[in-house]
Length: 170
Length: 403
Image (cartoon, rainbow over all chains, first blue to last red; front, side, top):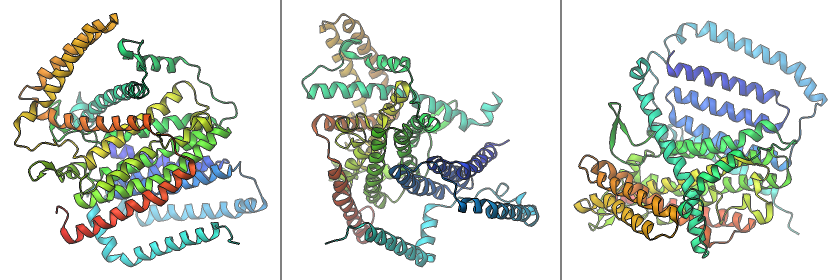
């Protein structure tokens, strides 16, 4: 077994393990930790695909910034264990069948639609290494409108948070 | 042996990791000794003195003491997270060091040509920030999992502080990236070669002086050191996030803090101080013998100091160390080693100066108040680094990267 293959299996297993842990953990901090595990394992998978920049950004932004805020808020509120309510029981009866349905759909697609291609995609041709320059050229020429729109959206969100958090002036 | 011949890169990496780990661990241990000595000097004390000559064995004694202390886990602590936190802190702090190159030369291990860095990547800087941004979890989780008031406060403070200052830290570096045009440390250092007027080195600290100031300040805050050590302010929070930690788990936080110190100093050296480049023009041949001269002078000083000392163990140990230094100095004049040793010599000299600056600050400045810390970060440091970024961008746009 080659080293990339071993890494793929380990990180794939870790991300699935983390995803299951995220749902099953009762303690919010444990859920957050599981999510971080998923993100880091996914970053390694991106790295194996040759997208080193995306992998680094995945860790820097998602695991390093957004999840830190999650953990911070959980700690600040000192949130205890989850409480079961009627709604969460509903989620079990509706969510479980839906989840199984999506899983079956994904499995069907993977095994029937892409069965022929998986054998020689990626590994045979070798991963395409996306350079940071290519990525930023695409981002700031072809996709500049969605990019700027996203930043305006984030700006509005920041302003909204400030308006909500500001004390009433008397 | 078959595996070795099949995966030469893997084997060479493992060898490099082993050497680097040994060097870094020793450096960590003696950084604590160095810090105590310098702070003691500032406060007109002697510092560690009795364990070995001039307290040279103090780090070893401390390590053994930590190993043999009782390892207490609070009964109400969240066990998995409590144990995970110090491992996370130390592992991430040490991982970042893998990306730091210490010299331009290529050496050969087991017939493999290799560079003086464990992991060479063309986006090394982003990777380094990515890994170090995860370091917050060590502190935050330690604070949360202890299930106690003071650690929780410390963990909260450190999360807030590290998030705040990480923004300025990252922004302060972007100016350098714009001028160098690369994330690769080799390119960044390469862009700083040459001299203005034949004697002023073209280091980034001159065009990016405000960036350097922002970086230095934010880096101190990121490593939770005085004057920004609010997460462990002992007058307010007992010991902050590591109050409930004992034995080697506490030592791991301690080591992580010092490893982070070394990392940010290395990064400052690479980005702003010309990395492994010598400050003198290339034409000056005598500078090649500076490492050897330094070692020989140091060795002589050790021998003389040792003979004059009144401590009996210093009389033995110092001359022996001095003779080792003399031998190393003589080795450095060998024509084969001469070019290889230059890069690491200047790199380590600069890192050492920055570390000294850190310790100096610790001995001099009082701690910030929490609201001062936050307003300083958001209202002064962030606008300053943003302004620096804007000005640099405009200059790069109109003049070009290497003006």
